[in-house]
Amino acid sequence: MTDTWILKAGMRLYPGAVWKLNTARKEIALTFDDGPEPEITPKVLAILAQYARQATFFCVGNKAVKYPSLVQQIREQGHAVGNHSYSHCNGFFTSPKTYVEDVEKAQVILQSSLFRPPYGRITPSQYKILSENYRIVFWNVISYDFHPRFTAEKCLKHCLQNLQNGAVFVFHDTRMASRNLLTFLPEFLDTITSMGFDTVTLTNPVK
Image 1 (cartoon, one colour):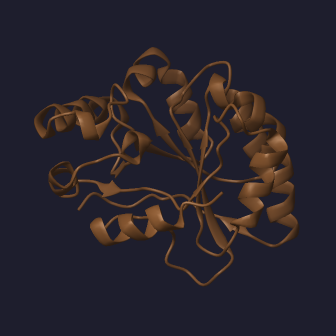
Image 2 (cartoon, rainbow, N blue to C red; image 1 turned 120 degrees about the vertical axis):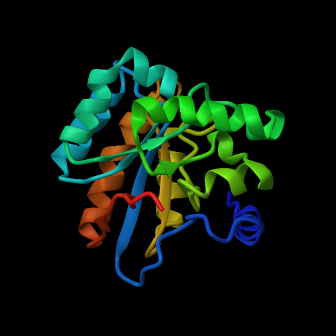
Image 3 (cartoon, rainbow, N blue to C red; image 1 turned 45 degrees about the vertical axis):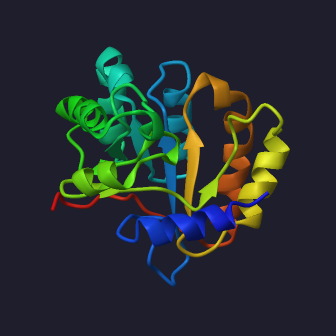
């Protein structure tokens, strides 16, 4: 299962956004969405620490308010934090004004130059406003760890089939995804380590 046509369309519509890393080296970006959650995020952090891997966590503002120590823990362990809106709103069904206000509400807490649209859904008008102050980050490989029809084995296979220089992977540090994620993530990290891939965060100064 691939989303190649969606990726190509998105890159044409939002050419200034990050879809994959601009590198020919064996580097990839690991990103985690929709947390932090106290039952899951620390387990993900422990796995990443075991393999000495850095990642970017796109946190939801209303969860960051509830669990500020988890956001601090993410940063203290050398990972990057990104803004994933305050209420995980769908840009396709939200007015530009409300959408931007929701992102800015999260920004008060998260203080990040990175923004990832929830569901990857953002309108051109919303994008135009937010790209003035944020680096908008999408992805080119989604793990489907949240999908009820995907097993951990299937998630792993999909990720490895799409492993390439510059790939930006998206996982989810949530209860919904945890059954798959916590099972296949160590094996995925084992594999990329054996293949010589480095991992990088997506930090970038505010324009």
